Length: 158
Image 1 (cartoon, rainbow, N blue to C red):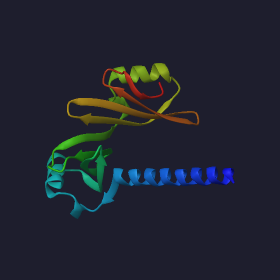
Image 2: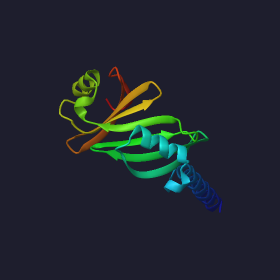
Image 3: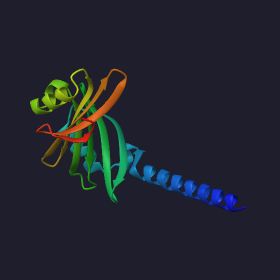
């Protein structure tokens, strides 16, 4: 009997945790239509990137703050711009060619992973702070590393 009570308690606890996790994940990002994005945001994106093709819109909350994300493509460049509701830019993330990574980032990456192949390089700008993310594979292993512009590893395996 005691075992059944413990098992039920654990099952209920696990279910509640799973529901809370799902609710949090849903709150993070939600795909939306253009009509749900403030016009100032779409106008600002088109002004800043007139040749970009819009691929999608999302609404997201981070730390209780509302943002709007516009995914776009301009030639070979994929770009995600995160806007505040007033139309100001919060963050820009765009794909870049691996050769466009700063020399310090390339050097750090090659020292740590001489046989790895870079599959994607991204540049992220938040205000005046610039970071770079490198996604790569080494054999069957895939990994991601985030660097600052001086080549220092911020996140991921080095």
